[in-house]
Length: 528
Ligand code: G4P
Image (cartoon, rainbow, N blue to C red; front, top):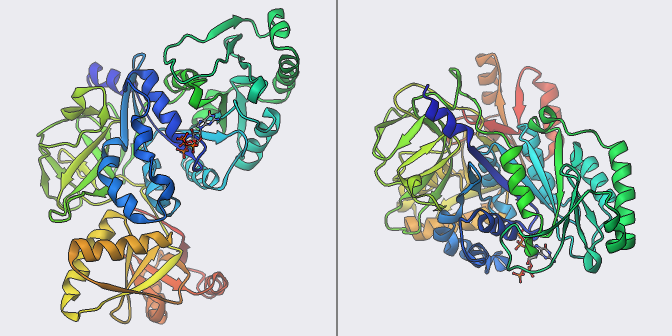
């Protein structure tokens, strides 16, 4: 292991922002880039979101695909660190994709709208982070508005998300009377001034959270805040690094992203608190990030804009070693060799991203189907990383071609769309009609459109009676086969031939579990 590799790993921070739409994710992303110097002018990230409000029409999403590849990973340097920020798709119908992105990060930044508190999308995403023990930092945004009382918010976050909240800053007033934040760790107050122009660290600082100047200047707002921090100090747990790193405690910051306020604290916290890339589990062994040999895992596949070429970009999280352009790599699943000469460039201030990468970094490799979701790439070692989740679909459709001569194209198209993670495709144990499974209605529309435009197949997508799916496994192979034979009319196989049982009602599942005690039913399949 070289000292250089270790120091490169230690200075990496890879995270995603999770939030409910409109909480301020785009604004904060932009401000983080601005503060780190990765972009010069505000507006570049925001611009790509301009039409997103109207995106119940998926065509808009399609239009943005090209643009979003470039900005789906943003790399910036701040202090001594290289920060990788992974974008998570905004539309909730694409939440499966978001879940997979969350497997590629070492920490998450949760943005909460201080007026709305914890909202549904945040709650769902948080569950995924909790399941993986991902450390979470919390940013409470929009303090320049009329919002909930900070104590109430803190309480809500604690209750809803089931984790300890440790305030690092505390707001003085809100809306018109928002005076700034008390920095409880640095024992100072950072005074708020509105405006989007500043992106240097030139906030006015007043030393001492008990400085008498504060009461004079901020009056009632300060008195209230001072009372609240006393309460918080008595009631809230002290910050415990171990609790934070295992996702049981979240440090909380207040600010206003649009006014560039509180953004620097978040960047500092990412650098100081968020973990560097750690070891990753492969089936065969635990892999350390500073090991000299390169390895990585595909967590996202994005089809390219040009339908004629059907090329796709595989997003790989580097798990160990040092990636160099043109190096000889192996796709462990298929044994195929890969020699990525062109690597997709993301929004980055560092030119080297194109040429080299270390653990924690993300590389985009264009390919024509050689790479699939969950694939492990190495320099030759047979390693398979685990943990890429597939969720049991909640909606099903049958798919048939209008023109029977196009059956082959339909199968080819669906195989590719399935590999990309756009939809899940199931082959029933009995019968020949393929089934599609999704977590959101929009996915079916996307698939129908793409089948027609990219594969020249007009598909008939029709409702079926299933609403619940569970993957089935059993330690006893014979018993599993007996289950499949007995339930052939409602068993289907997914893209990797894992058997799944399809049901109409959740109630049926309970009855089935009672009848087949040895069979295990899973709502989530981890790629293996
Ligand atoms: P999202 O990516 O999480 O969906 O949210 P986004 O950043 O787009 O922010 C949603 C709205 O909230 C935007 O207003 C944005 O300007 C506003 N916003 C973000 N941070 C703050 C803040 O600190 N204070 C206040 N008052 N507003 C904030 P919009 O009207 O939807 O869009 P726009 O017209 O401003 O672009």
